[in-house]
Length: 248
Ligand SMILES: [Zn+2]
Image (cartoon, rainbow, N blue to C red; front, side, top):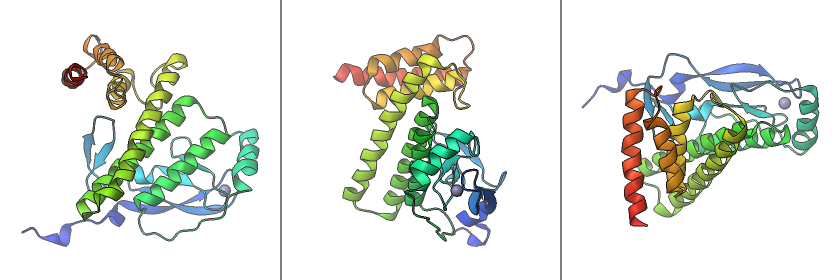
């Protein structure tokens, strides 16, 4: 029986940061992760990061509650005057201000924010890789929500809906990154070449595109630059995929 007095709650890992919206020039507060507080535990097969105490992915998107402009931290504020006009016309004019007073972001609100970032990316014609990355993040959020619901004992019927969404966005991410790889060269969205090959192996498996999954895995296994740990993970994944393919 542990002592709970030292146990941190999610709100201990975040703080309110004041932002100015580059589109409507209004001020708002967004929740950010305190750097160095949460301990990094690792990533899963689709690179979803896990940290102790908090799901950092919920806090990736900055969204202006006044006009709806939204972007991940890495690209927030990177908009040209022409893009600002496009956001004002295509989002701001139709968007109803949404000021929420949540202490922490729920998965559903993080999912909404991520979808607004996807809408913004579409309106400002972001690179295809950025769209793919947002699809991936959205899938991570659905996965996080599923874990949370399972722990809470939510009915399988409700979870099923989230599972379908997770799968759908993993498929979109796969298509998006595959297209991006035709015209962009890694690192793509800060993902290096070998990590991207690993991600593509996992995404191709998710989409039951087994031949390409094996091809991406062998790009790692046969590479001179891949780290040995990465090669091992790729080998294990390739074996799994071959077994799945044999069952077809
Ligand atoms: Zn705004």
